[in-house]
Image 1 (cartoon, each protein chain N blue to C red):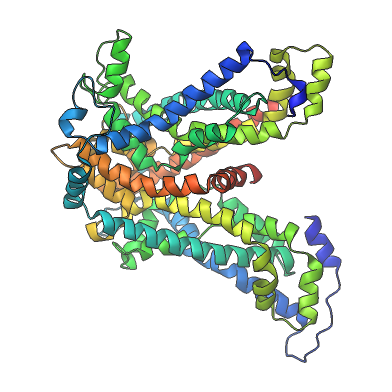
Image 2: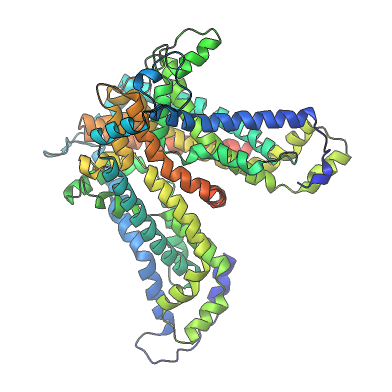
Length: 281
Length: 311
């Protein structure tokens, strides 16, 4: 909307809109702030009336307790490995498949593409138990491979890449490269890849965040402390008999902060990536 | 699609080098090669498990010994288990409690964000979207502590200001559902807001200008322009949030813990408990199959309603 069709003076409507958005923002940020407050306070300060609302001095103590309870850095490291490897693998495999669907001719192409779209509609829980059995048979239990290898399957990514390549990589360029004797892979690597960097960014954010935050599947196949991803490890914090909320929220806070910082730095890219993906599919 | 057709009509340039395969064949081989990783991985970790689930649903098996064919016994067992029905009704209640307010408030916030009057728009956008970046586990842990059963729990202190007695959020029928729905609501409302905002920005301004000239009120504009134009996006969000709600797992698991209290157990949690706590793979698979059909039925109803309204 442009400015000219609305009056500029402060109307009650404007006040209302501001109040509404301010309340919404406060409610959105408050739990994160509160997490920080609790992460820096003693358990007793949390369990008192009124509870603490300003940061305390127990930042280090609480986090030391976290490290003594779970292998925090090990779990973060596992999460980083799993998320990065899957993201890179998915970017490569999906762009390659998307490129084939967008620019090559082969028999059954359209049916295969539709088959990929259909797989998106199957709820992931349907195959959960046999998947677990397969992982057991492969002896991949407690092994990050159990997350990484199945994680490479990404129907949405192929769909997304095909759409992007179809409309952004000109056929003429592909043909010209082929005339010059480029192999098909060279055409993909030298012609398509440089053009689809924005699509890579979008897919990378969606995928990385999804894997970083995933819980059910890692919970099923990672049973050993040393293989935990951060989400599974966080659950270990609340499983204790003695609930030290300062410690619990300290772990939760420090596990949340890295992603929030990246989000704040790249907020435009994040928001457009995560929502565009949904709208366009 | 247009892209595909033009490409089929296009002539393949003659190859410069002599080679065993024609250019066309090479292209086809590369094509199959490039898409094969998906199909190979999906066959192993997607298709086979799904088919095997349907097989397991008719077997008795604890994961170790021999399987035994039991016909529809597992389904009968699940469908006569009161806890399964409890988990199903819980899931449906939390679907309604978590989804409907989320979508309504999402539309209102998107409408507010879209109004021209607003400064600091990107600040509001970022803060409202932030919960979505927080992991579900973290959300469940934080809200779990806020919804403490005792009178010193943060939510109890807040409702206490309004004269409400201390509520035992973790153990009462509605307490559990409200707490879990709040977690879902908080994490997703901003996400839906931004999606609606994208939809609102896609509505041509001329429509509003024309309506203003015709003397339409704000309410009329919302009713006759905004809502109909947003319809595809509303359908999309209803669809995705419904499927998400039917698969609710992390929040209840973290909130009610290993006790699987029946006030908060959901269908996926029930399935998880059958499979990985009770090692009853047969009934668990049966539950997964039932869940699959429930999702299909509810999705079809969604599509049916979406096609009926707003014509």
